[in-house]
Length: 121
Image (cartoon, rainbow, N blue to C red; front, top):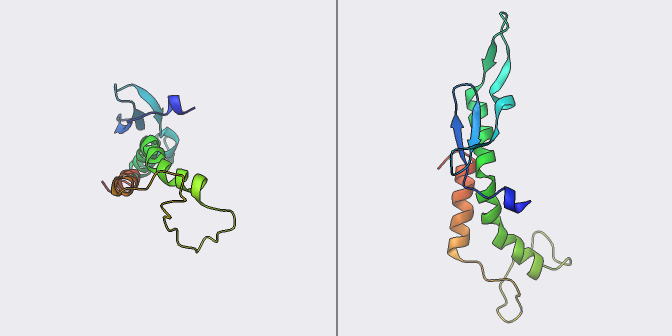
């Protein structure tokens, strides 16, 4: 599946609905259903552009969010025990950890991906 969700993707208003394009400008998805907000009395379509943009932006950010979360998931997979409580603080024990160390870049990528997904970039 991961071969099919490699970004980067971009959300774009095509004048009818919000769509998601790949790096080459080809449409890979859309937020048409999120853009449509019912019908008026004459059979015309009411549009909610803001909702369509929010959904398309989140979809487009998906691949970057997955990549940004990967280092954190690896730490969980390799170094967190089932006996630890969710409220426990994770501390790196250099001699015992098996996952790569988290870097400032890992946190920065996660933050930036989240800001893009929320439309706050």
